[in-house]
Image 1: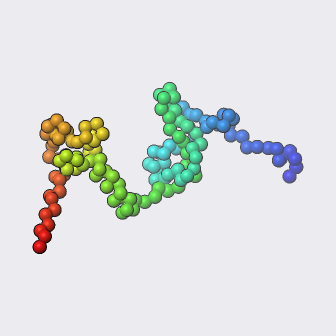
Image 2 (image 1 turned 90 degrees about the vertical axis):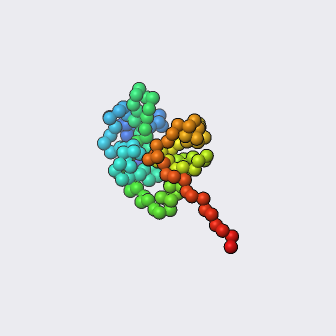
Image 3 (image 1 turned 180 degrees about the horizontal axis):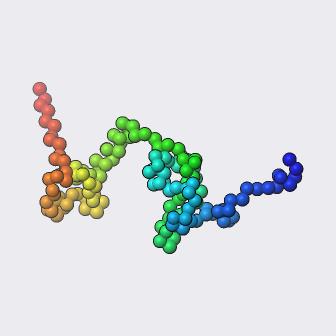
Length: 141
């Protein structure tokens, strides 16, 4: 290996050279790149890799990071423990603290503090929630 070969560096044509990531316009990214959502649809995840580019739309007001598909790893399978934790978190967002009903959608707890029926009397569709659990009566015998 001679001295001339040691001074050679790889040059990426998409790299602007100032240390920032290349920016692509909508639908103009390289075919080997994908967003997180696109990776998820392919059954993949970034797997710890850093983004290699950015895609912009709406005049630069919206953007998404792009990752290399060849370095992506398969999605991790859902375990029973993960499913239980997710259900517990969703139960917090779907249960009214006043009446105890669990809805099939998230209720506005931050803004209203309860479901609409408890907040202003708007009747809830019976098909939109699960009845609260019956109280647990235990006799001390």
